Image 1 (spheres, rainbow, N blue to C red):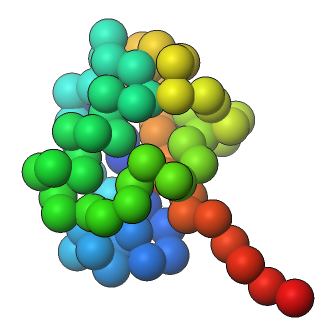
Image 2 (image 1 turned 90 degrees about the vertical axis):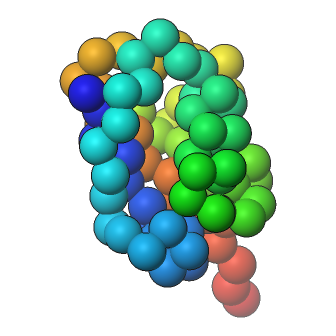
Length: 77
């Protein structure tokens, strides 16, 4: 199992701070597509992903026990 964390507005859209999913063997991109469809999160494809607190590209493979965080882009001035 894998813990999936949502930050900022993604948390609001998901309705939860985190969920437990079986994501091992999927790429970050595949997980983004699954989560977006099943949790109704819009624009998840623009979010940064981190695996075990290190930023990860969409091609990165997820392993059993990894913690994945989705972090939306931030803006400011």
